[in-house]
Length: 440
Image 1: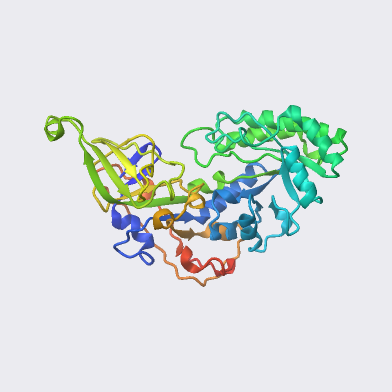
Image 2: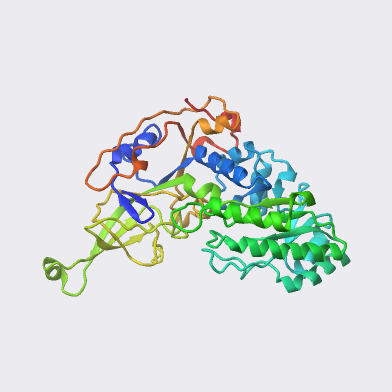
């Protein structure tokens, strides 16, 4: 069964698993994902075309899978690192320090701050850093607001800029984040205007203000909410108004969800099933009542569904269902509310598209259940973009046709592009980008 936004489709097991047959046993029971690296390259290209004046620094926290980082590095993307571990991942790819944001070692200079306490730490441990003052935004309409935790108010910026000067620190610009999966493109307009005020304050305090970071918040899919093209037009207009190109300000962004959400498809299977009867028991069901069905899956809250990414709403006949993950934690469930699904059987698979953002990077091995295996696909898009590829890995090319089994058949169940498929178990820590192989 393929879950796509508010739609639910039937896809034959053999057809869905065809691309992975060389790598997965016929009795595959573990959860896995398919990551379309061609689509990721297309998203990168779309970002650069829509916002040519903005340099993307990929948010590593969104999806830090090694092959994802390797391909993005080959495409020339910068990286936004929020921890020492993320920094070491990117440095291990040979990415120059100038292409990395956030760090205090290895020659990386660009950091953010939003308080005097942060300034004191920077002065003690990294006095040569180039600082961006992070501004609080109005992000209440975003799916995941951030400004309750991060960012200084516009009123506090003057004092912070003066404090930085007194500590001998160089503030080179301003940054903001409108919240993950922003639903109001106009939030960028106000935030960019506020940053222009911060630039004026900074120059007044003696700082050389030359860098603007507009953060992330770009949509990962277009199932609902604003389209990326609309958001890009709003951003471009605001930048032209407050930061025209002739001013020479370097503008960067931190796309994560936009690059990765639609790139990955997750496949999970039902490992147990239980019917919970309402008062009246089976007699009530014989009279047309219904039971709540509980399905226990091989992936859940501690794995790919940390944020409850997709809520399936299929066609009738439907039953109220609770979807649980495999761990012993009673709160390990995919959605807070029950969903309505057809009756399924143990061994059936549920497929969730658009699972590339904040899934594998937030997974853990609680109770000993390992994160989902990631299989990668790559096609001609990366070659068109000039990414060097050598034929060294085992791969397969497949052509798929769908068989309608009663419900509508989603195009994705029979329109997978031919390409190369391989597993993450190829030891990505020691592999090189040149290790990729593709059949054309």
